[in-house]
Image 1 (cartoon, rainbow, N blue to C red):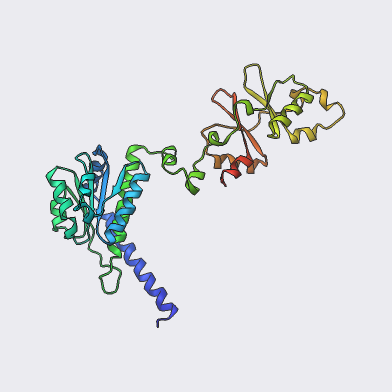
Image 2: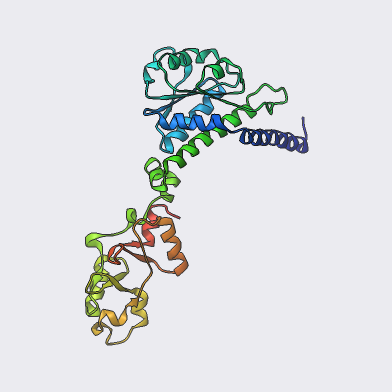
Length: 321
């Protein structure tokens, strides 16, 4: 049985080997990588990723990353491809085949199919002179770094490089396309990613839910509006419909006196309140509310006219934090 120190030393050796491999992979990128990105970008159909064994597991992740970053993609098991799934591949697609040796027999039919119908083929392999590398339109050859396994057999370093190279392809395509956070949200509506990418306009109260009054509105009526809309505030708009101020619960406490109901909204309101735009990330709006110690923000358009109200409770209910 090994000691704790020996276990840590082994783990660090593995990580150092894989880090060295990634550095070598990065240093070796060149014309072939650029050509591969161009083939994937030019394909009118989908990106078909394939691989056997551990390479197949990596391929599934690469396909998922491509799909989630705006490049339609899916994984085909090479053995299933030989039994009918080749019908899923069209002449408008591009194929990315992963094989450390470049001689994986199960890839044969899919590689031959891509050659027969002139479907762009990108091979990711350690074998520069392998069947896959020679057959491919572009061969992305991994640097000759040994596997981190002490016997040099278990796919470790090689699969790490394949995975990182797939990420590099996906992110480069993303940047070429100008993929934005808004685009990303379309493919990630659930979970923490979806929550982080929610915008103010997705959560705000608008339309009939807006508590708006005129500067001359008596505070007795303002209080009724604030109570009816249940947002703890009322916006005061000028003659052009722009937000001139806001009346909050805090303003009521600061102006508490017997004649408060007869005062005009303009006499009580806070002028030039903090506002946000509908396309601001809800997480950023929540940060502003926390920083300013306020519970709501008016949302205004480019002309300064209110289009909504965002309350801190709206963010919390949506899981924005």
